[in-house]
Image (cartoon, rainbow, N blue to C red; front, side, top):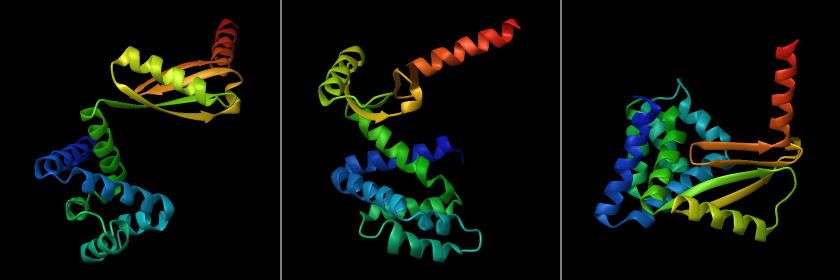
Length: 179
């Protein structure tokens, strides 16, 4: 099973949740799993441990990783453990949320800029991207000073780098190739 296969499991979980009318509960549970893993890195390490038995990993899922989450979420993660794909849990989470956003017409994007962007700038860029894509764009802004100027935009799987750093890197590469 590959990362793509794990994403298919995530899509299947989404479809099941919609079919059974429990999408909100499943999405909340998946968000809780993501938060738990981010808050305590040892959970992912414990889940990936080759020394832990399947039963110990199931207990970790039920007791900490997906504690209190919808039973569909708990069972899906336990299925990953049973298939020895617990290391792909991040792909599973990512696949679920990407599929959910795609089904709801939402496109997540990130804009990196050399200086902090104001709320108005972020809203205007999100609106322009929404017009261009026909989807509701949810835009996150991050300041990356090494860009020097300009922006780097990641929209789905597409990255547009219009930063000064990228332009300088291109100039440097051309100069080196000319020597």
